[in-house]
Image (cartoon, rainbow, N blue to C red; front, side, top):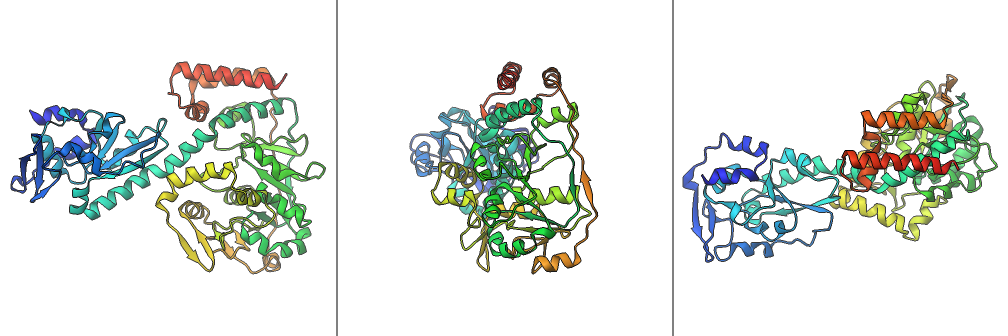
Length: 500
């Protein structure tokens, strides 16, 4: 009877795990506390206070509780330690030992003091985590159970991190940039309709040097100067100013950042012939030599249906440098490619070569970097995993980027131990064995009208609302018909406003 009343707190996964439990009853007993509550005892270990167990929560540190963080309790006991916290916010509970859980649920009616909890298995955590409401999570670990099952506790914590961290990083990025992406999309669609983009083919007939702004760029800048005319140089926006300050004019520069500050990378290029490639969600808009690329943003599915070229600049899950290498490997794979400044690490505590706008930006501790660091710290760097080799240092996020950038066809000038491309000593060494098969990349211009866009947006959203998901998440709105209809109408109005 007691077990039946407790079933409402259990997920399907937990119920399934409890179905075949046959515990040794001799290992358990119940004692009554001074305030007349049942306290479970397991193998002579008391799982809560025998005095006033509902005050157990005062022994637990809830200082990590932030407004948009979810509490995940590792271990349950009888749940007395969660009494105060669950009054204000839902708690996910992941059991450490199911024998103990079954005994407690069969003998203690937890509904008398708990209400706002759900007991789940560790593999269900992503299903029950509210990604729209919560940006982060924190653990409350049952002290007695942690002492009894230290290895199990550690493994559960690791498994939960693996299930939540990567998805949280992606979703928090969408929350942070969703509105900005949407505003930029409206502006860029208007920019396209005013015929300001260039769709001329990209033709390359030289070995390709892909440039990032990492520390190895500074180490190799003289070598790049020497062989500049023998290379097609493609750079990330963060490295552009470094090259220009060293009198190196690249052939093309790539930008995908939606924030307005990214314009600061481009001072001095207005009167050059540098080809600019920008993501369709970028804030960057020049009146010549700029070509849009499609990103991972779900709105690009609409653009593909309208006839835009399926030429993508995939930044997930990589940084811009690794993504740029992949771009050229994908579309110009018959030409030898070498990278520099794409290091996936820090050298002597420097993340950028001198001369990058972002290097100066970090030095003054801008609000932008504080915001980004807050996201990274709360999701990835809290559980930091550092490597140090020969003055190079990396963290868990950069290690992830590095893992996703393995490619033994690509050469690199970087001496970072975290780069898995093929190491070469110099550009001369690279050029001696470089292969070139002239390649042309074509861009399709659908020549669409404003009416074409509006009709297609409305038609597509009726079938698939995913193009609006980043915007809805950034506003923390539920995905329902009313919100979708309002936001798509607002988007259309923004496009129209930009064209006036």
